[in-house]
Length: 420
Ligand SMILES: [Zn+2]
Image 1: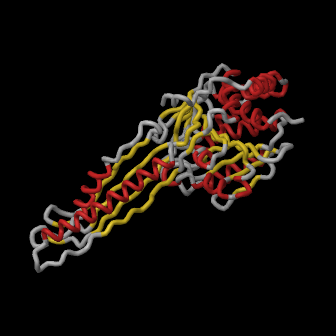
Image 2: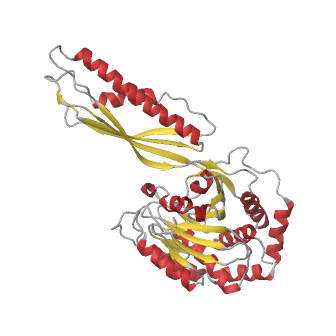
Image 3: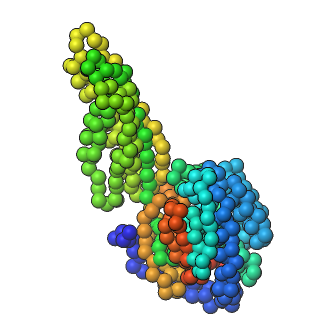
């Protein structure tokens, strides 16, 4: 996706850039970079191991237990798992507040999906191997390099393997973390690692609201009960009105009617009909406006069908009522990072230092939750390259992972600050 005009920062703060230059020149950081190169076989091994542990939505427990064990082996202290299954490990620092680096543990694949995970040369294959095998492996690589090199930093680093990013998980892991005041008030910066790559910065949270709309009526025979309200007609009336709602080009906003169901036979008036509606925007206000428009279109449609029913029904027949229910099936908050936010300055200085070209994007990630709360957060990739996300043919190429890891390490050290 092209960067949003205005999202580009024209100038970098020289002090931030100098800090990154200094970091890169330090012997500890140089030895960390060398260490990354030597350890690639270990990283690939971890990635294969974790991808072999199924982690369907609401079933991340086994993968979480594996991660907690790794956190312990890598010297994070304390290592904790919360009541929803998020795994935390701390690398101590000197200041108050945390810089978090997180990766979601869950995959889109339902329980029982065959996990044919394998390696061919520099390529790893298997469901979830990149999304989010790449992100989880990257947080392990960062914890490992801190242990191996003794690198120190100011603010403590909080490593998180979180649950519930994909689909019906609806960001439940992150939502849980940021609903706890102890975390919400102490996390200063959130770096989310999602999937492969080093060439993107997600700084805008694409929000979404999803609804299942169910319309119910008395049903009946198409001939003898003619005149009864028809739920399919109610949906048709509502869709016709709703899709005429104007949407702005900026902030980009969209809607979709993705599924429609109802009825049993051509000569029956249906007893029910349903549809699924998706609303997306980077603006909470736009999503709320579209939701109101959908509710209004439904109310009007019920009203119109009730009136039409009264006109169609014979004087002896009393029309039965028709009802409409709107059930929320997804809700991801929207938000954007200020272009001059400190986290943006740091990642851009890091990219400049590493001669890495990255684009600012909008997407729906775990960063939606802190961004919607006005906190500083971005989502980036775990390095390497990947493809076929959310398919059984998913792959990850380890070549170039090193660049991604350097980028993550420098960003975390830049955000945390130097240990004094
Ligand atoms: Zn992901």
